[in-house]
Structures are given as structure tokens and as C-alpha cells.
Image: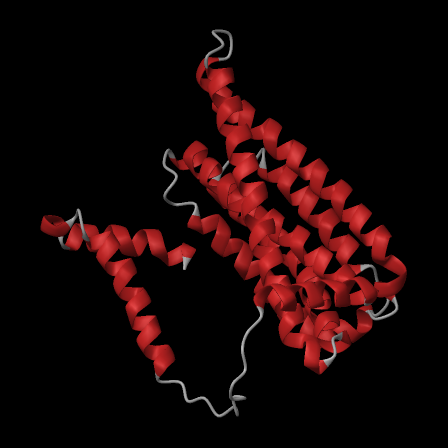
Length: 271
């Protein structure tokens, strides 16, 4: 979606210049409506219990209590929340890198799509040969690789190099995502699975947005401050980007090691 979104919207704007003020909103809104219509066509064969009243907060409390007692599941959720925090920050960093290398932020989808490509390739590899990596510290290896990729991302000289680094980052993303999702599926009781995944979805949304907001504020403020310094000037944008991304790489490495060390004994027995 990110990869084809910008070229597609630009193409539609050029195709209908007389409607340029509405074509983007109309296309995206129309895509949502079309998706909703397609979802309505999917037959539901499950037997839905009648008179079942949802209890959102009580279900979340019950799920939280469950994952505290179930150490492998709780550890897996913690790994995934940290991972989604990294992916959320990657959106902002991709925008800034696109502006530095191409002069515009709108083409950041190349880097995000490259990350998805790397994740897919690594997922296929793990699906075929994952048994050969049993008892390996895959999540820790994933966080180390992501941290190294972020550091290299800060100094990418060209778009091609940036795309290659994003693919490398995606390859290591799956080392966390797939084993942790597998542990949650395998170790969660069937009657708690919906509540646990509800808790996971809420946690992932929070983890993806809070670091994004924080990094956006810090990065934009730092860039403006550096650009206002006469001795730095326009080069402040790249310098600020490199400083923030380097710090992010160190933070990811530290939190990744802490998360793995905290849950290592419970999780490594299941890998």
C-alpha cells in the first residue's frame, strides 16, 4: 500500500487535473467503501452466541491478568509491542530520509515497502527451515539486526542503499514477529485467545503511536534548532536526522536486550 500509494495518487491527480483538490480524498475514501462492501460479501459460518454482551474493560483486565501469569505469552507480547514501536518510528524516519535524498517526503513508501519485502522473504525462509534454528535466540538476533539497520539508515547516501537497508531491517523483523506470534497461538488457551489478541492489538496500537509522536517532536525540534545555528545552517536537517536515528538505534538495542533477558528462560524453551 505504501509502495504503490504515492505513484498511484500522483497519477490520478495528473489524469484528472480539474479534480485535483478532491481526487486523493475521493480515491482513498472510495477504497475504504469498496473494502467494506467486499467484507460484507464474506459468509460467516460461525455460530454466534445469543445474548452475549461484550465487556471491554473486564475482558482486558482478565487478559492482562492471564498474560502476567503466563510468562511465555506475556514475554511474546512485550517483544511484539517493542517491535511495533520500532515500525511506527520507521514511518517518520522514512519520510525524513525521502526528503533528504529525493527532496520530497511523499515517496517514503519505497522504504516501507522494502521493509515489508524483507519481512516476507524472511518469513518464507523461516517457514521452510525454521526447525533448523530451534533454541536460537531469534528475537535477540532480530533486535540486534534492526538496531544495526537503523544506524546504517541514518547515513544512507542514496535511495538504492536506503532500500537495501530497509530490506535488511525487514529480514530481521520477522525473527521477532513470527516466533512471538507462534508462541502466543500455541500457548494461549482457546477460551482466552480472543481476549489476549484484543490486548495485543491495543498494546501494538499504543506502541506504534507513542514512540512515533515522541520521535517526531524531538526530530523536528532538533532540526529547526540546528538550522537556526549560523555555523550549521541547511546541513542541520541531515545532522539532526543522523543524531536522532543513531540514538533510536541504541535505544532499540538496549530495550531489545532487556526484553529478551527478562523473558529468555521462558521463551527460549519454546523456540
